[in-house]
Amino acid sequence: ILTANLPPKGSPSTPLFISFTRNWPILQQAVVSYLAAGWPASDIIVVDNTGTMDSNELGFLILQNPFFLNYTRLRDVLGVQVLTTPTLLTFAQLQNFFLSTAITRGWDHYWWSHMDSVVVSWEDKTPYMGLHQRVLKDWSEVGEKPWKWGIKFYRYDKLALVHVQAYKDVGGWDTHIPFYSTDCDFYQRLKMRGWELPVVEVGMVFDVGGTLPDLALLYPKTPDEPLARQRYRRVVQDLGDIDAAKHSTANGRNFWQGMQRGGQGERFNRDPIGFSRGIFMWTEFGKKVFRVKWGHKDCNIVQAGRKFEDVWRVKKDFW
Image 1 (tube, rainbow, N blue to C red):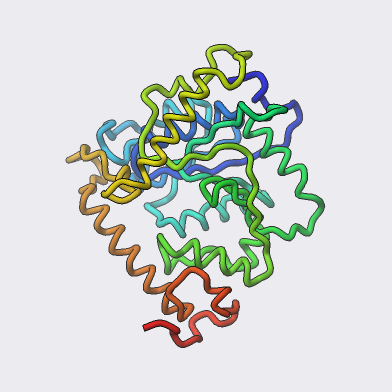
Image 2 (cartoon, rainbow, N blue to C red):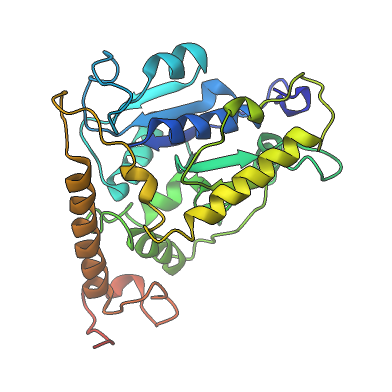
């Protein structure tokens, strides 16, 4: 890790949740990128949301299984924490699981990231500050309580900082809307209650559906490697290409979730194609719940005049 990326001694804790359900190589890349950007390994919590109970921890699943997760590498090599959900959770349920964990541990804030994110520090900006150091700087500027912000976006919620009290104020995430549209519902409810949703830039956050050919590219050859040289430029170019390809594929941006097809006959085995179909059906139902709940089909329910107390009480404004 670049010496310049190491957090100063005495830095505050920066707990970061990264949840996992499918595609181990994508998750491993995300974790490595945060470590390379200076995020302390002890602050990173990978949430095993495969729904396979203790199968991964006991090493019962093979690499080709979509739900395979390498506990040994995460804990013993990379040094991060692993937390297992009691069963397979939806996206909305996962968000409430993060919140519940934070409340149990007495945290008033935490960070979370999608597993298909890759972070890279800006090496071509002066004076240089690593991504994690910029996160620390942003945290140092939040000021005294009461905080007015509910969540801080670093690239939408690909990486975000959560204010626990704000989440509790709006009642957490609506689990009736399990996947897509649940973010619209939740963030709009934050706005309705007067919470701010600021956007802060701390570095590059790529949205990927593939991996670099070698994760060692994320690390410098030496701790004092000069900044913005060939390795850095290649990483930025390659990740930019992977990001662009993800959003232009004809198979949809979530194609990476169904790339692995192995694991037949193993514990908690699920047909990968059928699993994806089930998620799609549940997603479509959740979108319908959102439309009925707010009487509006688009995400801009605050702009459409909806108020917090209007939930489930307004006639639809679309046909």
